[in-house]
Length: 216
Image (cartoon, rainbow, N blue to C red; front, side, top):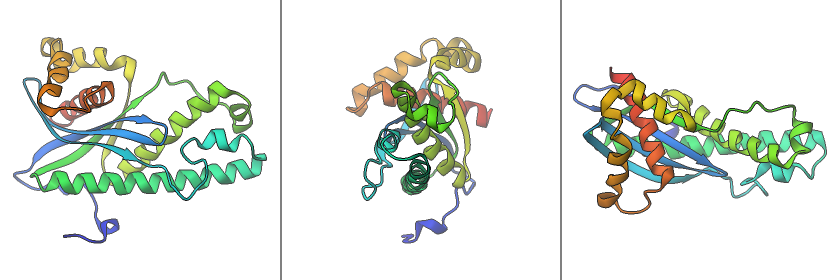
């Protein structure tokens, strides 16, 4: 057993291992993580987990921009940087653990899909903190960035996919086979059991999309 996970670099590509991909749908402070192999007609869910990336020792870290709103600008910048470093570290630890578990099943993950929102660009921090809708938008981007950087640190190829573009990308990559893919993914819940909500279904689809592009 590897005790010090910080020394592990992924993916180590070994002969005989089945390629897999990670899909992540992010919420404030956590992400629904699904690891997938195979493709349409032969989807294999290898692992799924709710990974929390909120540091418990930093006050307000589950909604960092909400907390930063009550601080002076220099303090807010320092606080957000502290939260970002801690959340990225926790995301990296969570993903390392998942990769090790997947490795034990003779699979290797080389790519990661992170679901994105509409893609609204954010202004400077003072304007964000002055707007409640922008605070929510910024927090979504904050935790997506934590998972993104963590996956890159683990040597995965990371792709962002806007959630509203999933159907279009599915048709483009899988053609006619993609028409029934959402129904196939939904039906997996019958054997997997809960949780199998939109979080896991869309993370699964995103992972299948990047996996297909990776091994094509």
